[in-house]
Amino acid sequence: MLEFLESSPLVDHHCHGVLDRDPGREAFEASLTEAETPGPPGVSMFDTQVGFALRRWCPPVLDLDAHAEPDALDPHFS
Image (cartoon, rainbow, N blue to C red):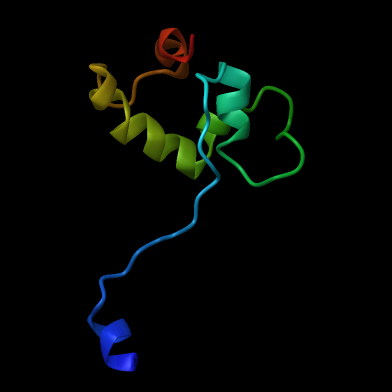
């Protein structure tokens, strides 16, 4: 078993679940954190490290420029 485990590539199995609908922005932002409460007033989950990474890597998949502002993503949340 150890030989098999040592030969396997590293996989991050952490998953927050799969949505069966398009989320609105509020629901989408809530899924970017494991916190039980929102951040301070005026702070978005897009202002976190995961939010910065999301804004770098995901917009090009949506035919948007990398680092697109969160408001540019809104039409994709329908």
